[in-house]
Amino acid sequence: MPPRGYAHARGKYADFEGLRERVVALRRAGLSRRQIRDRLHVDNNDILNRLLEGEPPPEWTKRPNAKDDLRDRARELRLQGWTYDQIQVELGCSKSSISLWVRDLPRPERRDPSEQAKLAARKRWEHELAVRDQVRQQTKAAATQEIGEMSDRDLFMIGVALYWAEGSKDKPYDRRENVLFVNSDPGVIQLYLAWLGLLGVEPERLQYRVMIHMTADVEAAKRYWADLVGVDVSTFQKTTIKKHNPKTVCKNVGENYRGCLVIRVTQGAELYRRIEGWWTGMVTQAPVRLR
Image 1 (cartoon, rainbow, N blue to C red):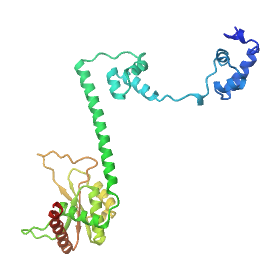
Image 2: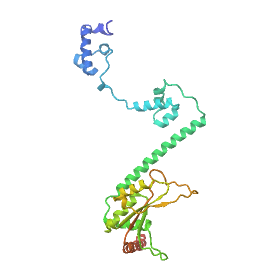
Image 3: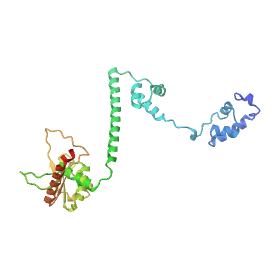
Image 4: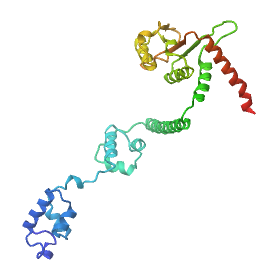
């Protein structure tokens, strides 16, 4: 049967079968409809459709659909029993699109209205938490950039304040002019060691030991801290083990719990006195800054 419109163009497309062979050959060679039309001068779309009948378009002409992933996810959720409202909250797309994508799937069993409300509220809250976390991370990243390059004086002042906050201190009733620092934060440890280096404290004067809860992986913790400070784990002093109190609930446990690292500077009495003096000088200057 001749194609529709063929009678009006029988002069131009008289050899339909011969033309179809050429069209099919070009199609299989990877040409698009437009390229075939322009090359063979087939201006009638009805005839071109008949000539291309049964021949799929080449892959390169298929435009990716940006919503394909959303559609697949919507169908997956629908098969799990999710409602349109729940899918909309989860994916952020319109109900009309969801309806189009999943209309061939069976409807989920009706849930108790209170249960649906709870699920919807939970999804909204999870979305709110995700937004808040994104804002939080952006603020932190911007603040990180504000620091810029740290000068030696910046590090000096930071180190004095850091030691006075976290290090051991001499008391009139308990004379201990030792430079002893304990902390569980790797970043704090690295900053403290950089400060000691700025003061000219030789690495040979540093002694390390781990202070950790008895239920933790002690050897793994020692290896972690040794790698962080760049020394052999065999140089660590005897570990201080914290005994478990059955009346308390320990929250600082798990694979990321590594206890605290104790860093002692040997022959540190003179250094301690200087640290205390530096701190006193900083405190003396504080009221001046408030005026």
